[in-house]
Image 1 (tube, rainbow, N blue to C red):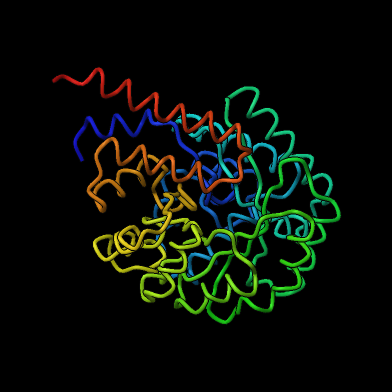
Image 2 (cartoon, rainbow, N blue to C red):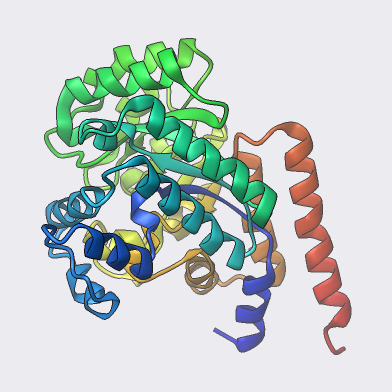
Length: 345
């Protein structure tokens, strides 16, 4: 990638829609938490985390991810992690992010539900005040934990809730975890005013995306990688402007896609789908949102204007309020105009 394009991406104002709370913990924070909890198998040395975060397959990724989740053991851990994630986002010019949070994982490990909510909310308010990063939450069901986790996640989201909560999701493995069984919990969340944003079609076929659309009333699809295998599905997603939250490096790291050159993002764009670029679990995959924009620039052959348009896709697909969308889209346009004006003719 040309250095000028890399510089452009580094300064480009952005929104991110598919990024996990615990999965965004930097090596420094993970190592610090591991040192506080010496019974954990997670390395205490930040330099050793790269090997620890080398995944054999999606199942191994879930195993490693849960080992990191187990480092979050009290409300102060939650607050520290959340604020530091926002700090890393601010360095990348991320103005707005919908962070996927899995309250069940923390509450089931003994953190009181209200203390957990208070911790993320305190960090959210502080991050917006101190760093200029606006955070909103997607509370997601960890699919591998079954229907009990769905019941608890829906209870926390609907019966307790918090100001920053905007959506309800479903993560974890897809194989052996059918989407339709979670319909009652999504119905409850949607009735309470939350948006539906399940993962689907990451490690299974397009039928899982259809299930998410029909049974869970998905408004966005997390990953949706296999959608490209079904032209009718791509046409449906494009016609109804249902956004895809695409995470290229993640798909390679978890072996959902064999190589970047085989990634279906090009087919998605060619079909007219609303594609957004995201980092998923960035430190675990050795990436960040700026890197993912660089990957997208190569795969889609984008110049500065194309990258700005991609950034505006995320704004359009977000659950930011209308005035916030207008402001952020205008900031992206202004950045592009200023860049083009200073470019040598």
